[in-house]
Length: 305
Image 1 (tube, rainbow, N blue to C red):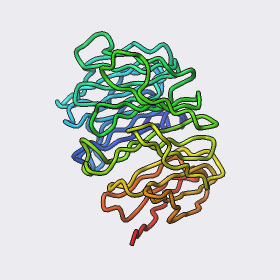
Image 2 (cartoon, one colour):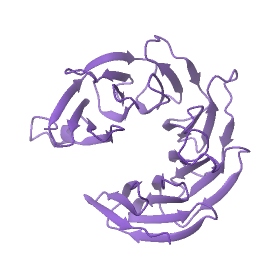
Image 3 (cartoon, rainbow, N blue to C red):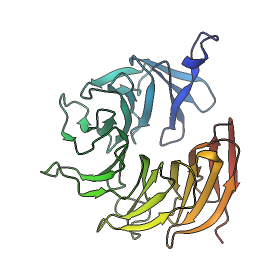
């Protein structure tokens, strides 16, 4: 049901997907610019048409009444999906180039980033952005809020990752991490510190780069805790385990590593066929899934004992 013309395979490609926080609904974004919402039994709930180009990022707010999308058409859209009919709640046109990633801070406020090198903070109901961060010198690939919703991490093709403090009077980042030697594709916060399920463990940021390394950063003082450097190819995905004690990373050429965060030790690895573009943990912290360009998903048993 993705796309209608079977000869036009390109339009059917699903570019992004995300489950709602209650696990009842799945949102998918596709190359044809259409977002779709499905029940877990596979039935289609909403077809959301509004973007004029591929959707790169889709996120549910925690409440589950809004879905946020970022697109190649330079816009971000907040969709109202609480009723029988999905509709555009608000469309934001602040970026001057494709919007690559979006992330909710809370049920009404979100961040977006773009190939235009900028990061915007927007709120449903406000016509203009609340804040704009313009420190990056090349396209910004990802934005992520920390568990407390007060710090925003961004990463870029300019080889840097930056941490911004919302409401800060200056346009300067709180931290500017410059140690990577190539583009940084993604960033992930640890599920630790204020606002998380592990409030007594320190907050960390992981950055994954085309320089084949993953770096872990101390957010209190901005220091680099570890350089995880066994990969030989670009790292496209990292994921902290639910406890925050382990980190999985996946790279081109199918290499998956699991690291102990405490000391940066590699505790498990797996080699699959094709390139890895996403890794994820199960909630019990007993398995890691990795999806490969060879159209395979591998689920790896992980026993930390």
